[in-house]
Each structure stands twice: as C-alpha cells, then as structure tokens.
Image (tube, rainbow over all chains, first blue to last red; front, top):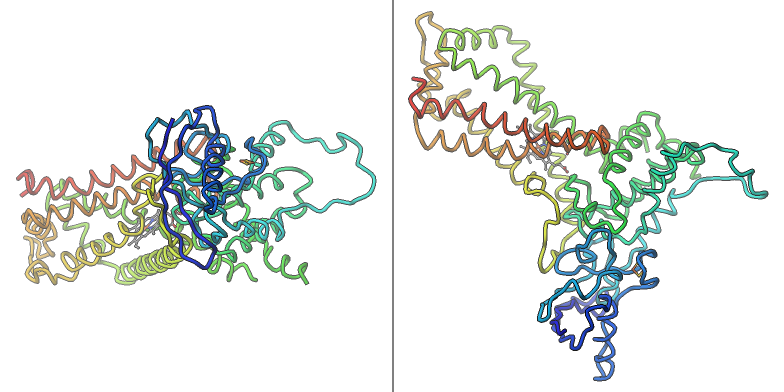
Length: 257
Length: 225
Ligand code: HEM
Ligand code: FES
C-alpha cells in the first residue's frame, strides 16, 4: 500500500518547525507504524536527506518511549495501543496521515517527533518513591496485602510514563500520570508512611514543571495505552485535600532541609 | 509552604475553589429557580415571596455579598486556570481532535463568560431596573412591588425571552459537565459512582434549563399573562 505522510519537521527546540509531505511507498499492511517510518527514513537516507527523528525502544508497547500524534490523536487512537503497536492495516491505501510530536510547554521538542519528557523524571525524583530499609530481603508475605488492593495498585502501576495523557489534554495536564504514580505507591502498605507528603510533593513538582490543570475532560483516559482510569485522579484530589488538612506541606519542607 | 498558600497556589487547590464556589452557585441557581417557579401559582404567592425575601435587609445583603464573593472567586480562579492551561498548550495540533472530551467540558470558560454577561443583564433587567425603570414602580392591589407583572412584561418581548432561553442552554451545558466535575475535583468519585454522578449531573443541567425556560416560554405562549 501507499500512503502520504504529513510530518512535523523541526531542527531543534529553538528553530520553529513545519510540516513536510512524504510518500510512503510499498508499505506492507502488517508493518507497524514505526516500521513504516523506518522504510521512509531509509528512503530519505538513500536520497541524502535528514531522516525523521522519532523515539522508540522496546517496540512492544511496554517501555513508553514511543510518542507520536497520529491524525490528531496521541498513539493513533486504538484502544490500549502505543504507536509502536499500531499497525498499517488500520489505514487504507492512499490515506493521508498527519504525524506530530506531543505538544506541551513542559515537553519541548528536541527534534522532529522527539520531545523532552524529563519533566516526568523531575516529578518522580520529587517523590515518586517509597522509603525502605535496605539489606536483607524481607520475609515473603510478611506484609499481607488484600488482593483487590494489589490489583488496583497494579492497574495504576501499569503506567509506562509515555506522556500521551499530557499530549491529549487540551490543557496539557499531567494529572493522569501523577495520579497513577500517587495511587500505585499510595495504595500499598509500604507506601503509607509518605502517602500525604507524596501527594503534596508530586503536585508541587507537577505545577512547577508547567503542566496545565485538570478540567476533567477525560481525554487522557481515552488515549492512555495502559487504560489507566481517571478514578485515580479523584484519589489524588482526595489525598491532596487530606495533605492540606494535615499540613503536609510544612512536613515536606522540613524534611527537604 | 503552608496549606493555605498551597490552596491558592496549586492547581489542585484552585480546583477545590472552583468546585466549592461552583457548588455554592449551583445551590443558589436551584433555590432561585424554585422560588421563581411560583410565577405559575399567580401574583399573590409570588409577590408575597418577594416581600419576604426583602423583609430582612441583614439577611438579604448577607446573601448578596456571599454570592458576590462566590462569583468573584469562581471567575478569578477560572481566569487564572484558563491562562495557565493555555500557556501549557500554546501550539494546537494540525487536526485537533477533542478526543472523548465532551463539548460541555471544552466550553466551560467561554460559556462561563457568557453566563457572567447574562447575570449582569439579568440584574439590570429585574433587580436594578436599568432596562426599564418603570418595572420597579409596578404595584399590586396590596401595594407591594408587583413582581408578577414585572416578569410578565419583561418576558413579553420575544427577543428578551429568546436571550434568556439561550443563556439557560449555556447554563445547562456548564452544569451538565460542572456538577459531575466538581465531585471529581474534590475527590468524591470512583469507578462505580462516576457513572451515576455524571448521569445525575446531566439530568440536573436539563432540569435547570427546563425549569427556568418554562417561565419565558409560558409568557410567550400566552399561558401566563
Ligand atoms: C451560574 C453561575 C455558575 C455556576 C453555577 C457554575 C458552576 C460550576 C461548577 C459546578 C464547576 C465545576 C468545578 C470543577 O470542575 O471542579 C464549574 C467550573 C467552571 N466554571 Fe463555572 N459556574 C458558574 C459561572 C461561571 C462563570 C461566570 C464563569 C466565568 C468565567 C465560569 C467558569 C468556569 C470554568 C472555567 C470552570 C472549569 C474550571 C476547571 O475545570 O478548570 N463559571 N462551574
Ligand atoms: S517503543 Fe516501547 S512502548 Fe512503544
């Protein structure tokens, strides 16, 4: 099959970008979307042109590295699918496909489709962790965790931090990502000690990174390749309210000294 | 950072303010509508109710100041959040698809601004009397302010009534997303309750629309005169 691509090309974060059209010829429908881009790139390299820069690593939907907005929808709009798992059979011969990077102030474009997602790393560094004693591995099953709790924590922990939630949100809000991290640690017994301080500090780091606020449009949930539920956003809102009532901000500030 | 400054500085704190002031305004909208629906009971109950509302100046002004504060906080916070949100996403996509985001959820701000304009007109129309000063001079047989007659006269202009109904449609949209959203914003939602909260939110939006629009419609149709 043959398709026409309209791809965002941008040299670096300082140069303004623009769309460039390319023909992708002789594409096998069983190719993944990224393999199709590989084919186009080989062609570009053969012609001595700069290949299209895009992120990918595992190419099996588990690492969260790939990121592209396909026809206006992050990851292309197939339920629970990253763009590396999107296949060309979902398109028709002769289709015109628009490919863009995540667009958010907090995710500046590095080159073409590659954006800088280190804002997420800063949020995790701020308090996306639990404190445990190191040394001997603890006795297995010494902490009992109800199955439903473990399942829910796993639902939240499925987040691969790809940033599609931010890309989809009209406010470029990172609430779904932050809420998933907050729930994945805060649901488990091991995460209780820092629960409210964590909620407080995560939100602070999120705001400082320049993400927007949540208007509860739920487009994040719709594009999330791991189908993380906005239910966790309600939980973050709840934890943060308790954090304010308990004065966790002071606690966080004094422990940071 | 203290909790109080975090309430004002953080995006989540601002959303609590949006949700709580929005809930307060919603409560007012419902009570105000129920009171006004006495229009269908005739001049006597409505005019008596109007006198009752104004009988305790302390309470009246307390309520007015409270509402003013709610409106002020709701709009101030809405503007701050909207500016922040636009700065967070300055560049649009080539084909922006509002992926699963409802029309109501995307138009909160512009709809809200329209509502503010409506509130200003509504006050000029029926409270301050700027639109037609003679409205405030109408008296009924018991020499009370004839609110019933004022309302009938006010809504007998088709253009004015159409404007009111259009604004109620905007309010319906704002509330159909806003009421459910407020529950989410204060953390009062989960997978099981969300379906119902959102459903009831939409129903309440429509109830407010039908309740309020029934008055200008009844006047235009000649049912009330
Ligand atoms: C009759 C008057 C009004 C009522 C009853 C009302 C009610 C509400 C409610 C319940 C919410 C949901 C809060 C949340 O998501 O947590 C909301 C949100 C909102 N309202 Fe209003 N509102 C009114 C007027 C206005 C006005 C005059 C504006 C003017 C700008 C406005 C702008 C907004 C915005 C922007 C939001 C979304 C905030 C966000 O989700 O980030 N509203 N409103
Ligand atoms: S490349 Fe790893 S999730 Fe797509």
